[in-house]
Image (tube, rainbow, N blue to C red):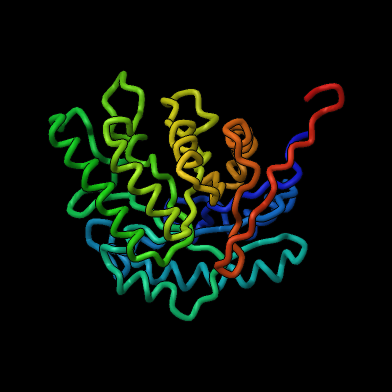
Length: 285
């Protein structure tokens, strides 16, 4: 047995440059898994909206158009699947005109706000922490939180994705990933989200990985709850069919253990609170 309502609200079809499988195959898999809600959120890196030589000249404007057309086609193909239209806006405040253009005239259900790279730096994925001094790493984290606060002030997104994204890549070897050194800045972000009624995502893409450090999800979501937060979206960040809903059950286990009784899904840009309803196996909890 397990949870009555499972949702995966962050995944990518091959409309995204780094994903493998077509949207139809992603929806087919989500339907087979019996997900209560499924949202594809293809990438729109706003700082590269009109193309960038550094990224092979790809134009995310074209990705947005293609992906949205495929959303509508696949909603017709899968009438029995609660398939929702989403978009992941990367670095929106680095090009607000692009972010606004991506949203204009399109009826998304769910808009994710992400920060994969701070201004004048590469994606955190490519940064080598061993090449930076401790002072430089501090500066990067301070700038990261400051730019997230800019995003929150802008506010035209529904959930902040993978807040621990830089911790995946720029912690020094042997260190446990943590924001403890930046607790005041983290608290400011969490309070800002709560005040603006913007959700925070529990990104489950690494929760089952054995070859990577455990991210401080428990600490972050425990603190979020203590501050009065209640809007949490769940996303496996799948880039292929095999990864859809990966770690979602384990994420719900953790949230339930912390004391959350609901999570959030967005439909027509409005939050819907979904009960974390656990169905135990006979003879167990």
